[in-house]
Length: 215
Image (cartoon, rainbow, N blue to C red):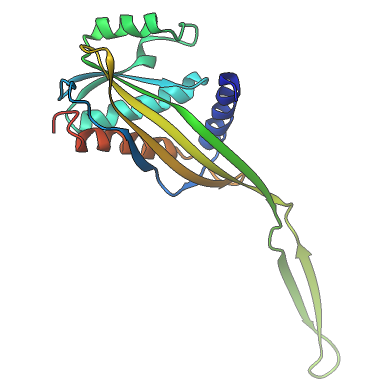
């Protein structure tokens, strides 16, 4: 499966989630790399990078991660706050950001996998009754009108994001997790950013639990 295919999938998925709404079971976190013995923790200034094809989606998640890190007392900067849609997404671009803000760590989140399934669902009919008396004793006239809404489409997604923390001093990954979410949504839901918020909170909570940032 190619990188461009993954980018298209994540753009479509988050575009739908942000434009509509979703019901998520919440991220399930798996540590894929324990804290390295060489980790120079706790980290005090973190550059937050999200690698999706959609600039807006990257910005949404990065801003939420920065917000949650701030609540935990850690200074962080979103990479999208120092670039625009035309800025090359390259190693040299991010290294320049590290030097500019004097970061001691870099947090990188990207798509690991995405599975989607759509199901057509029949909607419940709505009925209205108009009851009128007749000329006959205990006999009534009943008019029934039934309206059936168009079919709805329900989407079920299984999303996995991979997050790694890099030490600027050692120039290596010192910690990594995967967050898995199951999301159900349909086209009738309203705008909701809960998915982004939940992902950001899960990532930052586990950074704190594993002693990678000051508590």
